[in-house]
Image (cartoon, rainbow, N blue to C red):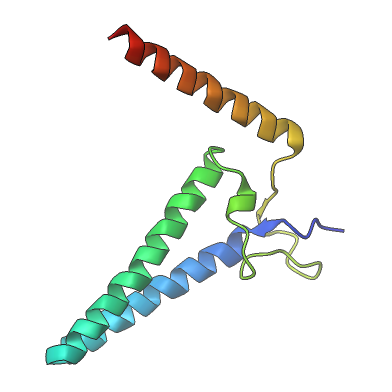
Length: 119
């Protein structure tokens, strides 16, 4: 049985792809809209594409093991029991991994702080 907190890479990429396709559709619509309506469509296009960029940045950080996959988990990408077992599953970090990551961050902050005092 799968952990209910497991993230499906396939589902996450499908959601991002849908957002990019929505942005493209808004762009095409924008070409035919004059005046105030065009401004609304442009704002919507920017919002949709900004969301896609944010999700891609977060996904990159998860894949680089800089961020816990739990930060990526959302209803649209949660694995279910009946989902394809060949899908790449992003499993949230356990307590030991969270602790190691936190300790590494604290160490890095300490070095940056010490470097700042030395100046």
